[in-house]
Amino acid sequence: MYIPLLVGLGGFIGAIMRYAVGGWIQNSVVSFPLGTFGVNVLGSYLLALVMYLSEYTGMVNAEVRVFFGIGMLGAFTTMSTFSYESFRLLERHELLLFSANVIGTLVFTMAAVYLGRLTVMHYWR
Image 1 (tube, rainbow, N blue to C red):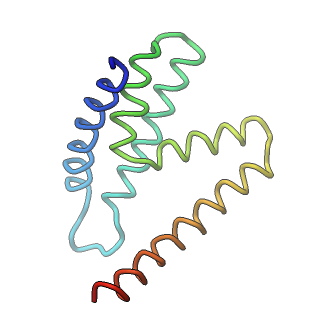
Image 2: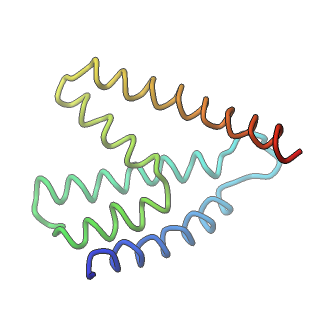
């Protein structure tokens, strides 16, 4: 029960951070989603810090990694996990898997958004 509480508490904080930081970064004059972009880039950097500190230095224990990596940064941005995992494939010279993950994620998530839009426009319009 302890680990799910860490994830939940981290998620609560991460969601609030996403709202606050994304809103702070976003410029309403610009149509590019700069707030989301900034949150995704920052989250990727922070997840890399947590994971690499955990893996290579032992400075971050498993509970802290779960709190920050899954809970807080998971709610802050899912892009951080995608970026970290993709980079790890690249580090291991698994170029085919890296390419499949990056291209597949982009194509299928965009397709899912499109399908969600179609569903709403068809059933709830």
